[in-house]
Image (tube, rainbow, N blue to C red):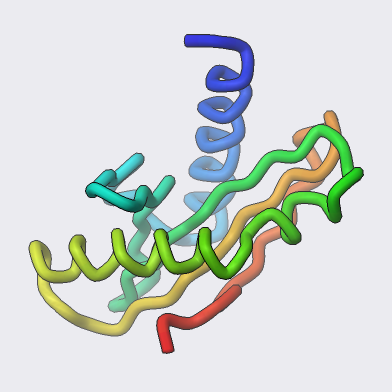
Length: 117
């Protein structure tokens, strides 16, 4: 694992720990299909939550939130549709957990960050 991958894995673990402290349960990590990947899949009550974790060391290009482009959202939606086909439909949402800058203690959780519509 290279340094970038190690930082990404650490950020995903921090995000998972944070979401668990907020009352969610992590049910799957790094779900991959051809064309898309979801970092964390959680349960929040009866809802399935598809979570994208973004870490940006620098804000040169708008920070972590700006890096979740329409193309990236499309890939997340594609992967979520595959997951739902395998596990059953139900209420769901797309959240993002963002880390901007080198201090990963600054966590921003965006609920309902975007929709599949």
